[in-house]
Image (cartoon, rainbow, N blue to C red; front, top):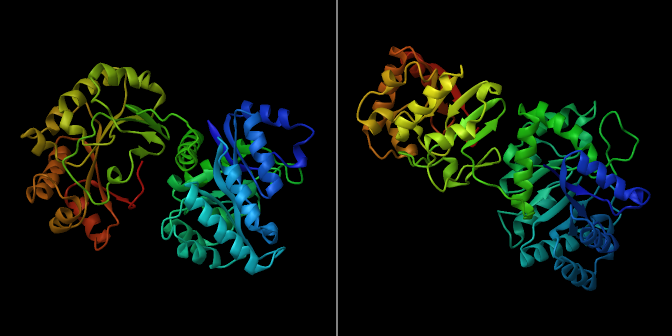
Length: 456
């Protein structure tokens, strides 16, 4: 499913074929569309469209171009409209100094009122910002929402510095089909800096049709072109982009989409197996302390799956480059399951990798590399830091000071048994990357750096 989080189906551009445009969107895989109000009349139309069409949801607000029209009565009506069942946001609201169709002071006042309404109603903001410098961030920071703002900076057109400010205060970010334009190289470079977990998709239809259709009316069905571009920008599959952004939109806007937990989950061309949620580290930086989702997959298990349940979840493994024991916990806590599942998969010629914190020998009270030889082709071992002290400070292992040395011994044992090993390190504060590189070489393993906060 794809979600167009920002379009204007209520505009007259769609009067002649609105039903047909929605059918084209459905055929293209669009499951939800948020129709965004940009005036009081547009907000009324948006609510009416959401009531008429099952796939359409609404936001209500007044665009900064119309800020001079915002009175206490308008705010009161927007509040009443927001009580409609399928209204999921306040927007589009914000600042636009590029055209200045409303005076700056009136734009700021209206935006402040809408921020207050957003907080009062518990609805996220859909924010428009153009040529307004840091004013929009300053206003958001000074609001009662403060340093953590629920909302999205729509149709992003700023630079890297503005992007960082948006991310710092908790905003999601969306780009329109303008990232497909031939002359949008700089914008695509900025887009690479957006964590995919904070990305939303939008067309802003009828505006900004994608490259190859410029000059024509944009519509939600053209999201497929946007997906293709994001796949190139972020190095993820189109399925990955669709799933992750759908989860993001569902999280922000509460669109009622079910996100069941996963035993087997695909990222790019690999299949990952989530066999336990238990772990022997309590890392400061671990995704588990922030969310139960990785790349749009729900990894919170109700029960640890059996060997049979795992194999059923795998299905036919031949379409994957590799199968990886990873998930939301430490796989070697279930060593017997790893061995049993790997034995079955190896009969089908599958390449198998183990992502581990390297505590397998401590957990099982014996060296386990020889038992996995021939069953698991490679290990990715998270050593994370260049010193024992840093490891204990950041990772807080259950086994205490013995853990860091045990992880290194685990790597040496795997290498001695002919298993390919990558040792991964994080760019944590104070960790020396070159020292980590040398340490991996000393252990006979490959060095693989990882960025803090990037998982999957």
